[in-house]
Image (cartoon, rainbow, N blue to C red; front, side, top):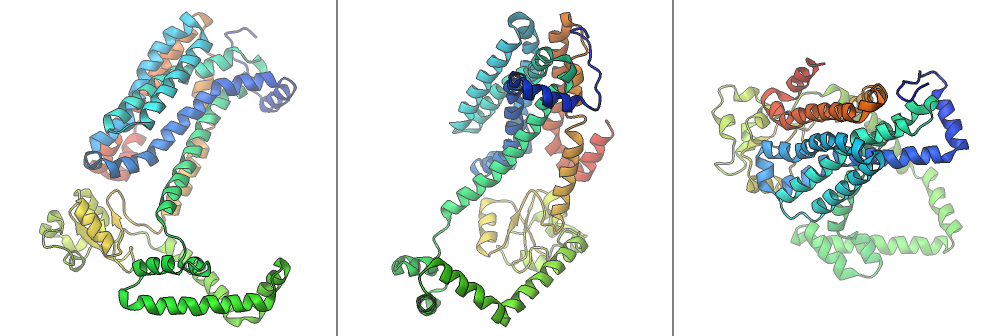
Length: 442
């Protein structure tokens, strides 16, 4: 088949791809080296969702202005539009490999700028640089892989770019979670029990003073001392070797009816909790009495003056730019609707309540995660990959660089429209209305 033709895909293409790359590893090295830009792009688009949470905490202006959040999110896409346009010319002028290399340099520069950013404009500038690199590589990488791959496995190799994009997004979400956990763990004190066992009594006491009222600290220290001494006595009776300790601990479980009862109850309550998660789907209601537990001017003005205030729920509160302070006993029970200020957020958290401003507590949040996962599983091998594969092979060789660049520009313009309007539409129409609106364009 000619250079400009499209190889007909069959059921054995991926099997053939595996066999060919196993015999000639250089082919896979070529595809992965060019497609690594897809991994970087996927990582960057995924990591910003976690980074935005910290930006809203650090910059009050970003937290208050939806358009500023949209701008930060969409500047990378805006840069990608220009990068894709310029990249089409660079492709034909300097070659595919040089274009991919330049894209990598731009991505590196943008990442450094964002890493050292001390203000929101620096983050925006860094994302523009990254966007230039992403735009240049978005069509260049599939095009390079397509032209440098054996015809019979070309489609399978080009699809690795889409696989790497999705893999980069998945990696970003994992790192967001791990980073959040790491930062939170740095702020947590050591276990008082462990400190007491290490004879660090004063350190254990200082932590207990933060956890208990002053009149209960001494009682807790005495209880801790008795518990640790009893534990040490048991260890001495069992023995010092590892096997002796394991036998002692395992041997105690079958004879301890309280342990078996606790295990049975935990299994039953776990099942009841899962059943309750499916049954309770409503947004928590609002309670005026809950709101009056704060300052006189703390209650959301729109909620206070609403004629239908008794029918308001958490979503109603958030739609009028106010915050939901969850019930202290159960965050799914009726809570308070308060004005959004840093003082109100701190006041809510001081009362051991959870503050919600961008979403409401839900017992079926896992369902959204499952459906989102199903969507990605369906999208990635289809519309997420096929357009790039087809677009890299359907044009005549003479116009392949230019036409590929124009197609990439069209893709990034569509992305920019969505990125720059999504949060605003969500506030105006709600999540359901926004997704229905975008569905109408399909």
